[in-house]
Amino acid sequence: MDAITDFMAEDHRSCDALFVAVEQAVARGAWQAAGNEFRRFHDAMLHHFAAEESVLFPLFEQRTGMYRGPTQVMRGEHSQIRQLLSAAESALAESNADDYAGTAETLLIMLQQHNVKEENVLYPMCDQYLADQLETLLPELQKQIAGEERLSR
Image 1 (cartoon, one colour):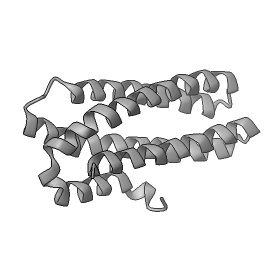
Image 2 (cartoon, rainbow, N blue to C red):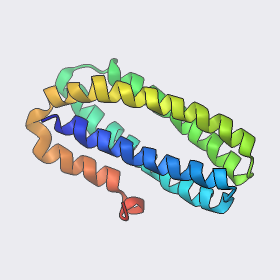
Image 3 (cartoon, one colour):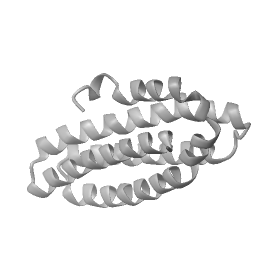
Image 4 (cartoon, rainbow, N blue to C red):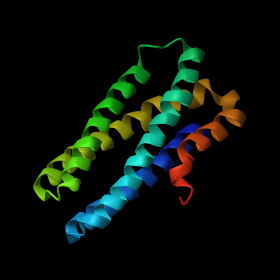
């Protein structure tokens, strides 16, 4: 079983579903609902990144000695995604459908590409190198992902 891959990919799907809810609210012109859904999506993304950056990546780096490899690339992409999240949040706050649509399209493409890299390269490597850590690692990842804001998940 690819426990880390399965667990983290499931959270990707959860975040994707939250993003879809934002898109649906924007399509209806329901700006307040879109803002509320976006906050849920934004929080979910930040919790996911925190789980990776504070738990998974450091353990993987320590175990493999790869500090300038895939985790560095993923951190760089997280930074770019955070910038896109901020731009999308601003567009929503201004009820600017055109700005939001452009930013959301870029964000969607970036997230899809990012998730493919993690799910097909990095997470399987984590499964390989961290298999003996699952008993403590998975609960810690869950704790980071759940966060205070996501208890209703």
